Amino acid sequence: MSDFSEAGFARFGEQAKHLGFDEVLKRRWDPGVFLDTHTHSFAVQALVVEGSMWLDLNGKSQELGPGSRFEVDHELPHAERYGPDGAVFWVARRNRHP
Image (cartoon, rainbow, N blue to C red):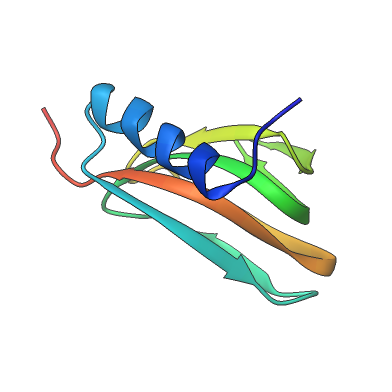
């Protein structure tokens, strides 16, 4: 069972920074939001803590709910769709690239 408390968020951040991620934040998306194919200048590692979303990545669509983790490398095309209750996830970003 995942710990979605503030202490859990702090641990998520500590683990992410240990893995080389330099920014950790909480993201909230409204119900039904669709983000068409796009890229980011940073790599992402995230944990869904509320609601649901679909991530379209590498030609596959994956439904994600509380406790689901996902990663998206920088400049990797992907699309996002948020469920009827929206979604909240914790995200670690790696803004520096080797």
